[in-house]
Length: 295
Image (cartoon, rainbow, N blue to C red; front, top):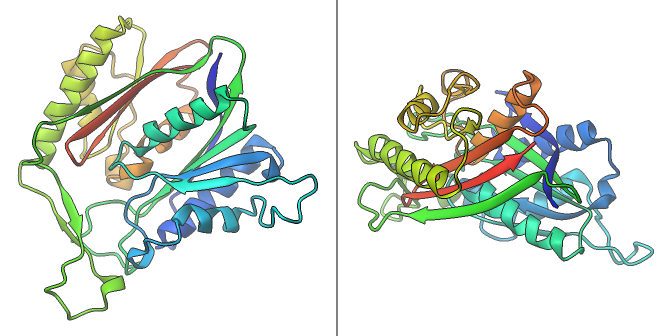
């Protein structure tokens, strides 16, 4: 029994500068691909970090729920039927947290489908060199199966210090622009190097602890820079022939990176029935998250 991916969707339209609009566009694509009734979605989780106008309340998930038309008026629904939406922010690792949360709710038999959406954008909705992440969106629709497929063995790891972590914040000493359009992202010179080391360490520990076959397991990794995934695969002795290097075309997709990689890999037919796919997320903190997915 496990939580499986029913469909995915992505939004890479350069004309869209909004994190929320990208998440909604990816969500529409995902729901259409799944061919389901939107009102069968009972849980929506947004895992994007950098959002439009630095908005904190309400949750961005609520805007996505409205934009996707998921049970917009539960009071009028007959029988009474509501969808629960929330934001879950954990750097680029939120996707794994969200899958684990959905998995727990599936096991309680409380939901039929769960939709996870993501998107990052500069709060001004402008293309700025100071913003290091790609303005894209992604969506993953999950359902529960009674067979032995799906996600399992969730694992999370945190570095003992934040010395090499990237930090995003609102600088109140800079009053030249409205607060809703400002963002400072400090990325230490060694951040990507240290993140790579930390991700390799996390993946190695996970592979060993779960006794995964390194000759057959397929890897999905962060896209912090060009060649990032290949370096991880080579360091942990996993074949890298199915790893897609998305950085050159899209940049660092951050909270959307793993969903995008799976979506594009599935389009290319890289994942076959009963394959074990290792999802490895890593980002600010330093923080990492891993989970095995049996297709």
